[in-house]
Image 1 (tube, rainbow, N blue to C red):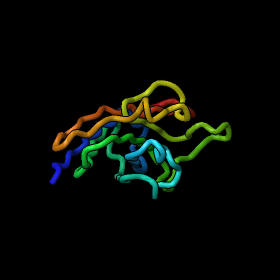
Image 2: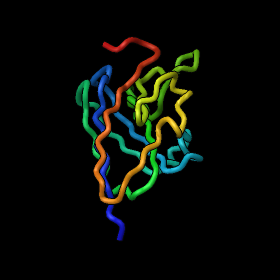
Image 3: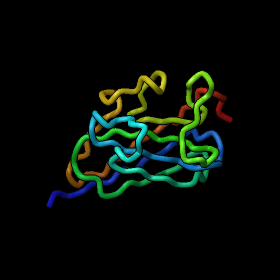
Image 4: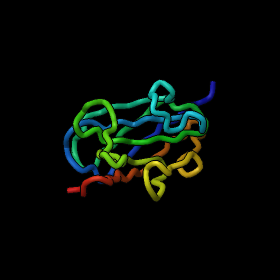
Length: 133
């Protein structure tokens, strides 16, 4: 049996202590950032407890992964957008790529989980529609 690993996400810059953090993890380039959570490898939802928060995802088999963390501030179960099409809620990607959220690609965000290895990632939330307070 191949040993599983764990992923700890240390999320920084959460704008408000409202709603939920939603982590969507993909395990394949063809499914990365799919709007259908049914295509995700795993989805984790947890209430926001402060401007910084730790989340732990257990039992990840070895392989390539990418994820997005969204701050569903109004807890409506989806990422809201402005009339200009930019996210109205916070977004953070694995490996913290620069640029607009629509430009995040698998090559910029993917990482490898090794057998039995525990990963720790720092995730910076970004808000495009309104300043962080």
